[in-house]
Length: 127
Length: 485
Image (cartoon, rainbow over all chains, first blue to last red; front, top):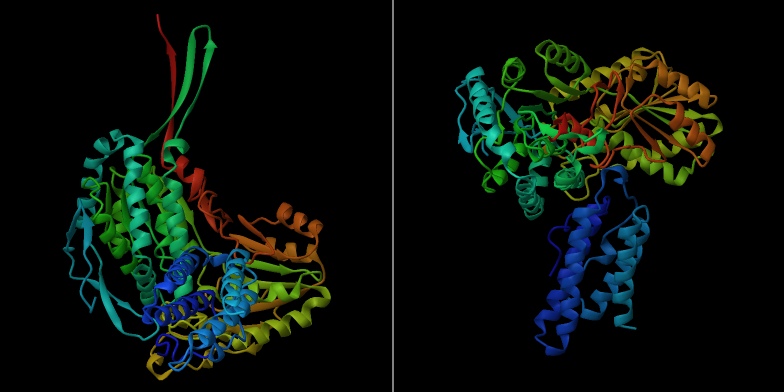
């Protein structure tokens, strides 16, 4: 499993790209959980779906032309989830991604705060 | 779309124009023809006016709460089709997808504000203006209004007007940009699904013939226009002669002032979006950068470095930060200004003319980020609206000199100051003659509950688009004085 949408892209240069990439990462890890067909994952799966919904809403509502500032030096490669990655590794990547993303979009506090929350949610799971 | 000719939307029906004349709609990133705009005839336009006029009395009698329920439904339809709508705007205009999303957010906000009409349209009254006599004001709709929309925000700008017009009980005709008509065509597909009464909202594609017919008709009431000052002034005069209400949002040359105490780290990214957002094709885009004092060199160098890093390309690709100009004409115009800047002695420190793009985009209308240093206020690039991704930088000694330069320019759409000083900021907002002032915000774009202002040659009329101004524009106040025996 490789992210198709961002296959060719090296950097995330816009707010929309960051949020879209986050949605894809969440979807990919969600797929990993779903594929295990484990009833104990139900709560986690619900959390993933809620996060995806929230990210979609953030993308629609917080892309505001007054502050569409370019984002620089946000390389994508270390966060991409590969076919051989375990759930733990994938979610760790997701946590690290959110940590960086929250800093990169600190000019939109509402988005940055949500990304920080998501970072915490993923970080705590595998501590 | 594949090169088909777009249809007009008249009386709740999609109808082909009678015209043989069409204009190609081109994807500005690839140079491909994607559809054709019919240059509709006088007869097409008169038909739209007639049905809008016929629909008026029935619509104005419809309770305000019922009228706005269509807008609630339309808002939901926009949210449900958000991705597709934004993509269409990017395809025909060229702006990056984030900017199309931002434009649609603004569009939706206007629909939402217009749903407050049952409150916003309230009149006022007082008892006992004389013994036993009461007096009240009723804000009534007037009839058939229309707008002539620009290419740079093909979704948002019509929404400054038509939702307020129909919510207050008027009927409406939209003439979309002939360069970027697909955006409104898609919106009308969604409107068509809502079951609005026939004739309440109509769309006629085309150019001057349509506009002249709309203004000259005795059955229309008023025009909302956004475009160039040159055309705007002509329409303003013509509307005056025909006794129409009119609001004309014209061109701009927005001066952005950076004080020595500005937060450089936060200011530079905002300046990048201010000058290069929408490839500089905003009426709120930065036009000239006025840099006060010793921050001049570090600011110039930081902007230069940031501008060089911008990713230029097809707006549908997620990493693209700046798209092409929206048309070949627009591109050539920008190139002429760059040449003019060189000839008049400004120093071109970043040349966007030779911007590199992928092979598949070689026919697109790309101009990369461009920066001129050592610009003087008399130069053409400091005086006229370029409408492209060009930053002319002028060094000034103090705030007074900056404001003096701003006031010598005929435009007054917007102006911003970047500073850490409340005193400087207050001085700026108090003195600068521009309709939209930004304090540490380069794109001073009012939200929908505020008027989209503008002064001097950037605006002709009394009432602006959006918010309460829009409600006042689309209603007239009737005074009723009452005594019962």
